[in-house]
Every structure is written in structure tokens, then in C-alpha cells.
Length: 551
Image 1 (cartoon, rainbow, N blue to C red):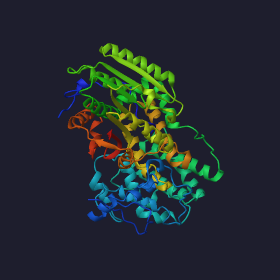
Image 2: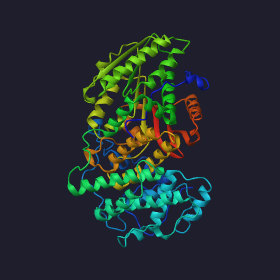
Image 3: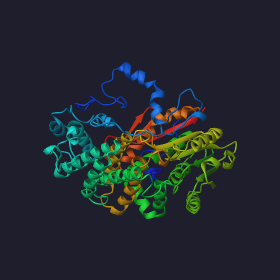
Image 4: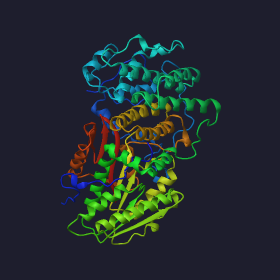
């Protein structure tokens, strides 16, 4: 997705217990006959000593994620991928990276080469499979029968001659399409573009970007991205839209201009409000004894996080707020930022809350200076970063500059929202597999939550499609947005003397209460990962929210 979810309406804290307040005081390995290359990260069947050893092997882990040596100072830190790497292995072991599929098989009950049908029936019947689970079944079958894809160019209309009888017709169709997609990705990774193009033609003919099941739409968007990658590789130039800008960001900005549609997106999807509540709650707790508060919002959008904070502070009975200042950083959309400011001023007046709004408008993150924020000695500063840092992983100069400015400001608390995904591998196929499962869960969420809102769903899925394109079709500097998981962010933040602070039990409890207001809320999970919160959908992790202080 783009920089982040879409949050636009004030959160009604009084609907939940206590409102905002301050606090004082058995893994399965999918077996196959072939061996896989040593480049794969296998997390299954490790003994305790192996896990402990790997937990300290930061150089090995981050060499793929960020390519840095742990002994280097921050100025030597680089997020750039290793250039020039191509997946040119020889079939049938060309998709060594598909061993990642075995790590996604943990929900299956001892799936081996003979019992996929039994395990699917045991684990999932009679419930309908989620989109991600269908991809899991397809991955298991692909690993089991992959040699049958390597003998000739024929396209089996029913892969391996048998469907899974325990699944519905729609689910079997989804499994078949996903298997074709995996086969196409394998051939693209080996630069067997003619074979891949045949498979992609079949996929695009039998899937749709608008109608059909969420599996069909996922397959359609990934197929389009693979086709663009082939055109880039074979023509030596960009044949579709040039990636000179962050296309995800552009689409999000357009959505934000359509207030009604943006409100629908916010109201229907639970993640936005859950993270908004948890983040605001953490800020309120850390400024509980302060009367002059300054919030720096790195991507204010329509200001919904701000209205939630304003409500919480206005309801404070002790230590009433003398002044709330909000500073928005703007790289584009100055008019929209000004309109957001007008709405916030009006809202503050309705709450009788002393308020000041300011915009720091810059052409580049590297132009930001601490002095521009006008921070006073008696202010408690909080920073809110919703999906901002992921846009700078490929531009480390800007990311490093921003972190140095934040360190100079030394906020009381910094709230960071990011996608909990691993989309920064230098290996194309690794990225493809990780992205396929991640976006399958995301499409499933949107489909479940927005069944009756076709236009809104299409707009959101269009943004997700740009994310897929960024991961699958692009390489090196073309990739404008890159996602890494919370463990990598922790190692990165540690280099700037940042320490993570835990969310309170109240934050976690009430974040879970937020999910209950949604009809689909039972599919949304909120769990702790160390001191941060991880939000998931039907068992698949989607978002992280963490809180940080500077030493």
C-alpha cells in the first residue's frame, strides 16, 4: 500500500471503556524431492542453540535487508539492495526461493507429498478458506508437483489432473490460478520470458482486476506486474508508466481529496482506528503532566489522528492544556494541508481548546531543520510517523537526515506506524513470495470489509496494485517504497540512540475493544511483539505500531 491507511474521521473515545487516559506509576516443512539453494531462510526445525545463534547474527540478517555492517556508524548505513543480482539458476531448482512457501505452511496439519487433501480437509473444512490460505494450498501443491511444470510448455487446464475435493469450485479455481502464477514467477526469475508470457496470458484471460474472487484479483495484479517486468527486461526500457514518482503516494493523495470515499475507507477497515487509538493513547500517557504540548505529524493527511488527540486532551480534568500546537510537514498538497488546518482550528474552537496549527512545507526531507518547528523549552514534543519511513528506505540520505533532526528535537515520544512486511530482499523471487502472501491477506481484508462498496474497494485495490508493481516489476532505484519488519527497524533505530517503550495494558485492551465495533472485527488481531503491537488479519501480520524515546 502507499504511505499508509486512510484515516479521516475523529475517533469517538467515549464509546470505549474509560476513553483515553494516562497511566501513572508444531512448524511444518512442506516436503519435496528437490534440494534448494543455501540462499533461503529456513525457520523450521531449528533447535534452541541455532535460534540463539541466529538471533545475534545481525550482519547476516541485515545484509539482505539493508546491507550494512553492524560496526559501522550511521553515516555508513545503506538501505540499497545489492545491484545486478538476477535469478538465473537452472531448472528445476531455479526457484530455490520458493522454499519460503514451506515457511507459510504452518497452518497445515503435517502436509507432506501424499496428504495435502487430508490436511486441508482436517484444518479448514467446513469453513471457507481465506485468500491467503488458498495461496498456501497452491504453494503446497506447487512444491509437491513442481517437476511436472518443467518437462514441456503445455499449460494443464487442471494442474496435476486432480482438484481438491474438499474445496469449493471457487476455491479450487483459486488454487489453480495461484499455481500458474507461481510457475510464471519461477520462469521470470530464470529469465525464461517466453514460457512465462504463455502462463501470464492464460492468467490474465482467466482473472480480473475488478470482479471475481479476491484470489482472482490478486492473481490479476501480480500477473500484470510480472508482465511489466518481462517488458522491462526484454526491451531495456520502461514500457508502461515511468516510475519517476511514488505512484502509491499519488493515488493516496487523490483518494484523500475525495472526502466521502476516504471516510468510507476509514469507517469500514478496522486497522486504521485500532492504530489511531493505540497511538493517541500512548501520546496522552506520555504527556500526562504537561500543559503545553507540541505534536509533529510527518504525514497529517486529513488530520484524524489530531482530532482524536484533541478530544482526549480536551477531556483532561487535571492539568488542563494551556496550548496544543500541531505542526504538519508537507512535501506536496499545500492547499490540502491548509484545508486540514482550517478544519482542525474549527474543531479546537468547538472543544474550547487553545490551539495553534503550523505547516513546514519543504521540497525535500533533506530541507527540514529542527529550528523550523519553533520548539519552546516548556513544550512536550510528540512525533507521529504514519507509514512515512518506508518511503525513504530507498533514499537513505533523506532517512538519515530526518532521524538526525528528530534526535536533535528529542521528542518525549515518537509513534511509528509501518507495514509489517519484508519486501526489501535483493532476490526478486523472495520479494515475490513475501509480497504474494502479504497482499493476499490485504485483499482478503478489503473484500471482507467492503463487499457493498465496490467503488471504494476498487480505489483501495488500485493503490495496493501500485504496491505490487513497485515490488515485482521494479528493481534497484526504481523501487520507491520498501517495507521491512519491526525487528529490522529496531536495529536501525538503535543506531540513533532510540529505545522502545511498551504500550500500556490499557492501550492493548482498548485497542482490542475497537475491533469489536466492526462486523469483521473478529478477523482482526492485536498482539504484542516485544514492546510494539502487531495487527493481523486472519493470522497474517499486516501492520506494526511502536513507540520510541531518544536517550
